[in-house]
Length: 150
Length: 363
Image (cartoon, each protein chain N blue to C red):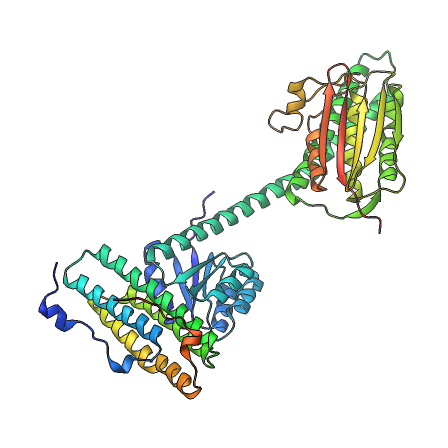
């Protein structure tokens, strides 16, 4: 199966507004966005419902992984809003659960995922960026950058 | 017995869309599902309704663990299992939940099948638990009925036949039959008492009162109660025990266990035989060995001694009858005291029953 031009146009693109400036967080966010894209790609290629459900599990697992990763970083830099941010993550997982069961079709679930990702990133994750800038925190000291070459 | 009542389930979450989602997912189970979105509403419902299961979200405005304790304090839901719902990354609440005696946790995001299966299995366990409790209660009622109503006629039979026996001359042709009636009545009453005592101890599975007891004193007391029957068979008893060793437990229960073993020893020892009671204190336990030079047992008999199914009732050397419950009961009584009972025996040479009971520190 090849990606059509049409598919390429529909792909969710990384946006400057999503950038936190924290290399590893941005990297993990990019992976997440690409997971949504891979899910949409599977929908367009009419994968069986059972296989699409397995892709949802893949996304859920990555969300868990990323939240823990981000929380571990926030703990290391003594981020003052850690508790609130962690609670937001819990709520996000709760919504992930809710819409998985509520969504009428996989397309609706994919649209929810995108909105869910963008809202949290540009409203909440961006605050970590502000805290780091205001306190001159050298991120590299606290957060190991995943060294993955293309 | 089957409980045909539709199981009642309570879902508690401050977000109504969550309670509604679970209600919808549980629809195929045909349960009566109620929803609550606050602690107050939850407790109000728990005051009125007995639930088979409660699903409780771990993150609520009022601490969910306190809500859980309050549910368990309500009269109708003390035994109701509670399953917490938590997010997969909420490690702190997950480990905390298990400390608060929750039955299980469902982690979000979950699969519908997982939710259905956990709810079904825990509801089933709860229903079976309730049925079991009902059966036990019914059985207890039957036992107390037996204890009160069945014992009385036997006491009357024993008392009346005693009176008749006193009035009858040895030459009277009826004397032997009345003796038989008296003997059988005594024996059946004994059997009844042993059965009741056995079932009571099995039911409670615990000692009613525990106290420190001087081992020497309680063994001497047991010897006193059986000294008459020993004298009748001209059996000598020797006994040695360190004076200070203490064991702990229920005095009456321990006394009856030791007495049972002593009566057995007398029963299976011939006239002019000998019984030795030796005690040995090790680091943490006291061994009381009751040895006789009686008729002993073969291996098959030893293997079936404590077996309720193949219970053996042997006649004593002077034709003494038994119920076959004595030793089973004794073992249960000793087990209740975290003790053990060991048997060594050789046919025609004698038997040794050794009780091992934990020693109570003297201070």
